[in-house]
Image (cartoon, rainbow, N blue to C red):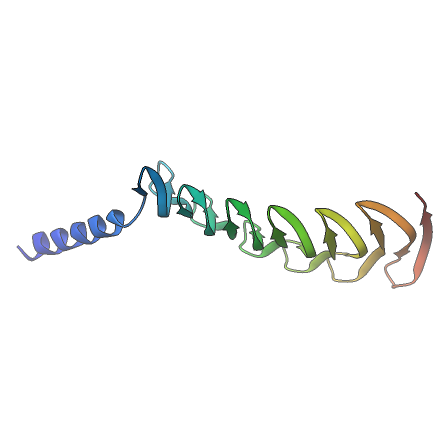
Length: 170
């Protein structure tokens, strides 16, 4: 009898949980929407307002690990977005504005070390970028203008000494 009561309590909890998701309001998606893999694992969770993505979105792999997360405003990516390696370490961190990458971008190796860092303008690499080896040492650095390498780029050897300089011109 106790097992039956516990089972009924568990089922009612599940029903209450699922009753708060995947709702329509005036024929449009509204509130939290959750999608599941065939194995029952949560695939993604998204928030809608009047049928438009608005708020935090999360996507998981079949093992339940977070793949990426970010925010939407008016149906477009807006704000901080993060992607993760299979081991759970941060892989990419970008800022989006109306679906376009802007500001600082950071990319990481699986071991957590910084791979590269620089800025974006209108979705293109723009300004100084630095690239690192997996051990954290600076590998090369230079400027981008509207997504194209421009100006002097410096390349460093394993001792941190400049091994080569290349001048990129438009």
